[in-house]
Length: 158
Image (cartoon, rainbow, N blue to C red):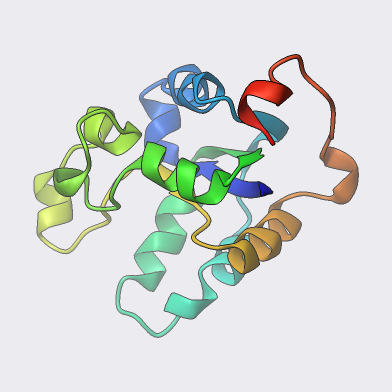
């Protein structure tokens, strides 16, 4: 089934100039980019996005980190794209991520993250269809998303 999902490239990915390399991972996997923008995240949007973690002790530092610098928000689509994107991103704990994943290749466990600070793991991806729909509508207006055909559609996106 064709699905669309949200991916956020966090401030650490932007600082390390990994935008193109990360997007290439998705395109080489046959996924389509339906929306893409560089922005400074609003605190209210980040708080809404991560509202299920509001009572957890790390919540304030997550909000602070995601609003600390530019991020890239993108909507990626393809056949079973939610699971595919999560596999491409890798385990949220960089030390457990497959070496060929985004986090396995570029995310590092820093002393800061090991002592209770923010775990800088480069990307966020939606975990299910419901989350994807909610998150996409939070970060994108409908007019910012494009549907289009591609010669690769028959190979990757049934």
